[in-house]
Image (cartoon, rainbow, N blue to C red; front, side):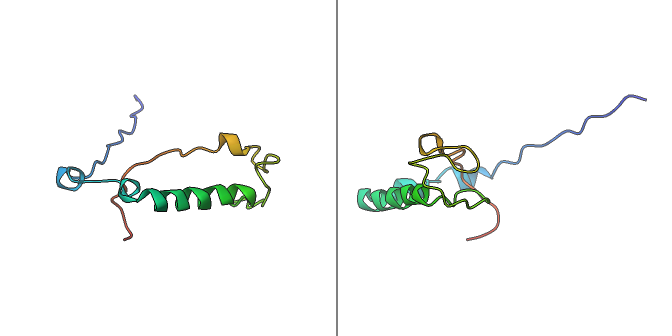
Length: 85
């Protein structure tokens, strides 16, 4: 008997939600954007970015995950239309 592969359907938000969508980071003033960047960089000095919470200063050495400050990147920026406010 042939094996059936599961077909995954891609769920996209309805067009009326996406047409007027503006990412929140584009609504930040330059001052607020700078404050958010400073807060993000502060996390690298006492790393708590992954579940290991190793607290290492990534500017001086790598964390438990073996990733240093220069390799931390944003994986995905996309609108999320799920639960929450």
